[in-house]
Length: 123
Image (cartoon, rainbow, N blue to C red):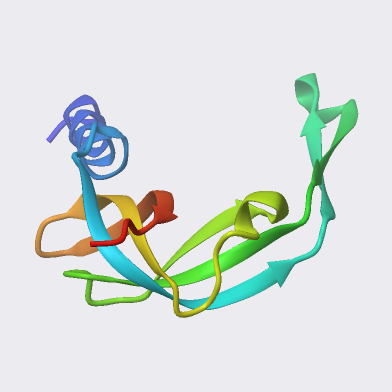
């Protein structure tokens, strides 16, 4: 197999597993955990041409909460992060509606990516 063919197969596999559009699924769930994550700063160094000049970028990440969710038809606990202001309306034990995508490779790996969470509507 030529190098070009191998690179094409690898890029096709990466596209299929991580980049391709995935169907968004809605499901009911329950919040099983809520963890406070304090504000922090992320520093990133970028190298210039020939790695001679280094520039530093700093990003301030505000206070947030990391939620652990038990979602119907998903065998593992999934996580979702919200800013501190939006997270005030959610508490542990509360029923929620979760929007998520299933990513990965069939029969090899599967990853659940939560894209949204809202309060469950009363029946």
